[in-house]
Length: 211
Image (cartoon, rainbow, N blue to C red; front, side, top):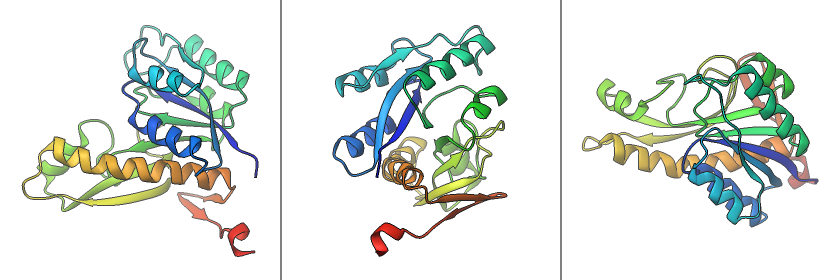
């Protein structure tokens, strides 16, 4: 199987990027991280990528706080294409993407979110989960659309919310599951095993392992 070329977009420390790189470099998943792009010039994730020998670039986002300027978004698309990227993985990338970007990579932009979507999209989700009194939270890998954490769900992992939890302790346990399921979702994409049927993402049987 040829390796799936993935471009990773980051804004911060890059813990999910690290999980993907570790699994990729170990040969556990048929994924090659082809390039890492950040809207933050000094993001630690850029150093993490460079230390693994992966091209890592800062592309200024423009003047907007929550989205990319159109010219900046085009630069992201052009740079990803220059590196042969087939799938774009958002790993703590704190910008909303628009139609032009998503149309450049149709059904090929994915994100990881620290809740069981559709519950608690957006920011500060662990605090919201605790305040709401839910007994379970978790992590979700989903396709990206033009909404906020609203695209079709690929994989989820549940984490219990304990009575003594703080947002920080809950986030730490959820992060363990994020690091597990994000590489797994990328492997499903690499193996061409995902089909989108409306809101549902269906996983086809692994014919290679069955043969």
